[in-house]
Image (cartoon, rainbow, N blue to C red):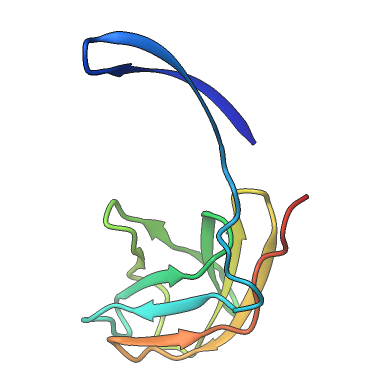
Length: 122
């Protein structure tokens, strides 16, 4: 992905800036989910770490209904309707790649190592 934009430098002159999104060098390591302090059956705070690409969405898959999480400005995905867990998360990156990560236990202030990672886009 290549995006061209305009920006200013010091003296207020305009410059053209080209940049390209590159995958994080995570090797074969899976994503990790950090469960936020205060998480319980009525509130889920989740920070997804070690993803190869930025996430577009995180959804908790339920038996009757799926619950989309909301990304907050402080980089946590949150919901008040996710339930007590363990949870199955569906992670989708900005390239449209998706995988499910099951058996995420709701244990505040812990990091859960997932079982998968996004493929490298070519």
